[in-house]
Image (cartoon, rainbow, N blue to C red; front, top):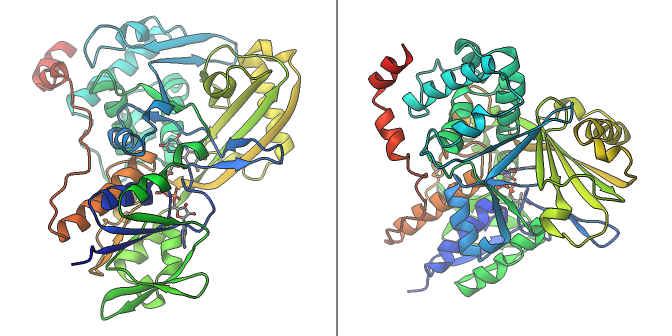
Length: 473
Ligand SMILES: Cc1cc2nc3c(=O)[nH]c(=O)nc-3n(C[C@H](O)[C@H](O)[C@H](O)COP(=O)(O)OP(=O)(O)OC[C@H]3O[C@@H](n4cnc5c(N)ncnc54)[C@H](O)[C@@H]3O)c2cc1C
């Protein structure tokens, strides 16, 4: 019997994560991507100078277990460099670092946090109190359904200073939204998974090559199984017959038939390719409720090195992360290439490129005084206005499952129900889940989704909440 044919629409991480294991398990896979390159929103642009720059620095954390597994399948694990020391800075040019000690989780970061010079003891006490609450509830405190992260922080008596110089700094970049528009459950989960439950979770992985090079091998990996990639091949519409998908109409007018279909495309694109009578079905109509949030990246080339660290986090400025791309990707290059990232950059969407560059230049001088004398040779601003879905309170109810009411249509993408915010980890999880479901229908019981990092033994013991209640008194 010929192998079942799966047509995957979208060559982002979700589509790739679904396609590769399906092809490895002998199913015939056709992956359609409308752009010339794979990687989707994790992509690079080719400048007229012939060099590739990423649309934005994409980072992972060690708690992203499925993304790590996906990089292994792609054969690019060695291109991700992990850092276990996070350096924070402020506009007075001060620095403070967070790194793990020999202590087990949740206390592994405690010594560096105790000595962290950019927060005072009143702030630290407030933060520790909130962290205990997160640990005691294993990252899932009881919340009213529409609670924002800001509400939760106020309820847990966080000072203005901790909100602005600590919680906001970590969460806006992790979740791409402001605290007053973020579901508290998402914010709390970030601290639980990355900083509290396991001592490795916070380690930050940064690609040492442009994103374009990271995903270029995907087509070959697929071909080693039973799959092939068609780039510059857009899906224009789904053809439905007797409640099933009968085929995909392509941009060139032809129709491609398969046994199963995975739509691994952003939510608004899915609505475009659905026939009109399906768009109003509850399961699809609700996804219109998901809003999006922007990320801006600013690429700056200086004539001389200005920043020794591989990356910095700013605690009190518009600019949030600064990546030293010269150190990360090409240490022998002359001068220095910095990439500034501003998440939830709503306020910048109407500003001119020149104003954004001037703002970055000025803030960098405060953060890195050595950059004052350096000459800015060129700069590029990249705005991604629909970078991710906005993790607004209650947004989970608009995120559909991988299964649809059409027997042979499955969904994947960072925006479907994965238990994770809009990240590469979420995209890969969704792809693995869609592949698992199809493999099961083909009689192959395969577990692709990797479990979260386990909570440390001490965290589990501390979970006996009475102990903490006594300790608090
Ligand atoms: C600026 C920016 C910075 C980010 N930083 C991080 C980060 O540091 N860490 C992190 O974890 N995440 C980050 N993200 C989020 C991350 O990029 C996404 O969560 C992830 O890449 C989404 O993957 P996906 O496959 O679900 O969707 P996409 O990447 O959007 O892939 C969908 C693919 O489908 C294709 N497509 C669409 N319509 C059609 C069609 N009709 N026919 C054929 N193909 C079609 C698209 O071209 C695209 O390639 C960032 C995102 C942006 C934009």
